[in-house]
Image (cartoon, rainbow, N blue to C red; front, side, top):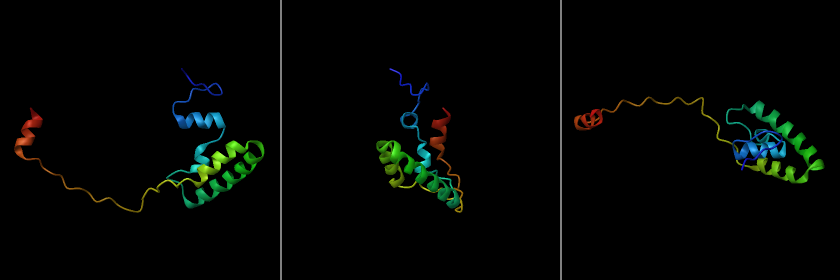
Length: 100
């Protein structure tokens, strides 16, 4: 059975929720690559949307609030450099088994 919301067919459960509720989940959950300034701007907009949702659809507003309280996504560590791993050579008998 296909689930079609607003004329679109969602592929994932997240897409289904976004289409059904009419809100972008990333507005409330954030992105792992956003800067501090982007996060502040996103949260300002999320608070405004949440205030409007409380008036028009309290149930959706409660869901959106729970997304805001969710644990933040892990930030990517762009300042840390990964150390390069040295190549590990396999013993001769393993190389022969792989080649065969």
